[in-house]
Picture (spheres, rainbow, N blue to C red):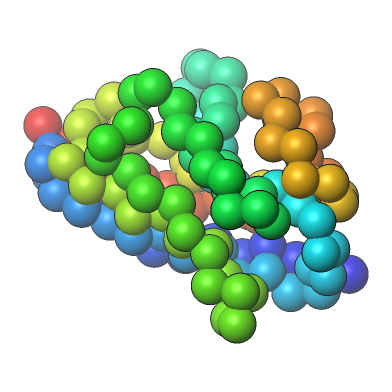
Length: 124
């Protein structure tokens, strides 16, 4: 059984930094795409950053240059380093993974596994 467990969410002031973690258990796909989505109240869930088994990464334009996604294969843990945080980054952040396959689709429907979310709040 695949489980994704996020941690690291917090309340910070604008300009601050946070590092989110997603510990994956039972996830044994050799070919995959994993990443982070976020959803603010009243808004659709959007893809923030993803990384596939080839090491290819993708970032939403709104976070390019500020966020960095990485994965520690030995620990089976995904990270999202978030710097220069802005109030508009406030959202619930979800870890997601495909059910095999390295294609990193934009649609949330392509991701078979989800964590429960971790809240990030950025105050001005």
